[in-house]
Length: 269
Image (tube, rainbow, N blue to C red; front, top):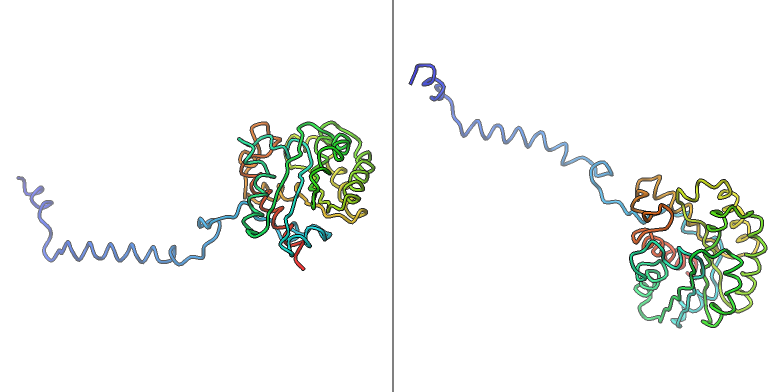
């Protein structure tokens, strides 16, 4: 062994390996303390409720008196979901992941002593006049306490004049009210295939105006989904199916949870 290699192999006088190791450990802990004590946030990996929405979006803007009476009395509740493909559940991997199926499960868990039934009457591709034509055949025989009517998206996709939706919506609401059911309107889905049609803004305005004039609640699905996308809670590839139009299992589940929450808030006495 050369003098140089021997000098490298032997520790210098006064050198204590254990003390050196301890010093390095303490130095590492000192550096880690600011990280460990830093407040948790999105950047620090805090959990995010991807279904969450601002409080103002949970307000339906009008009561659900019949539904409230049934729930508060512990009486059986029947809900009919009327609509097109996003009610039927296109984009979900199976019917159990459609929003009406998930809504039934969420509400039943919230009200375990109440018999709750959610009937799916969504038909893919339908426009609002076709839905109204089915009310007497497909909806009223179920004796609904609440009808959630999802409408408007297909009219936008086919560039139907939004003004034409007004009279159709009013006629449908009148039929449902006359049968003693609460009516909850649900507006458009937020998706690239919808946003390329200029009429979506006016359709949103029309549906909001109809809800106010007819004194029925409106669930603002478009604003909810836009919030998810813009706030980073749910990226479009997660929120939408591969067609970039229909909702996914994840977003149908979140939709059901937020509809259930809005119903509960609207029925509290």
